[in-house]
Image 1 (cartoon, rainbow, N blue to C red):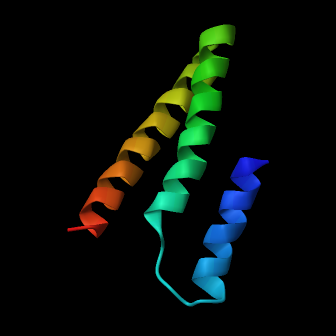
Image 2 (tube, one colour; image 1 turned 90 degrees about the horizontal axis):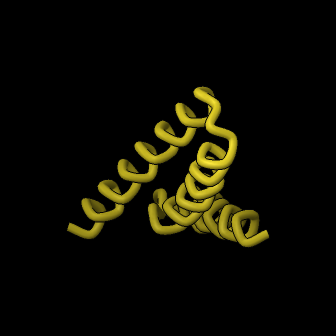
Length: 72
């Protein structure tokens, strides 16, 4: 539920207020999805789930880097 609210806040900020991407909101969404994929990969130990967990983890790291650079 929290992910949906965060996504809606990000959408409102981008569309209605016409601002650029806020990587803070995007990081919350990506980090929660990453946590779910990592948990699923640990529980099921299927190669496809492990690959998805690695991809989402890389996306989370990329989002953190973009967030840091947006403040510089």
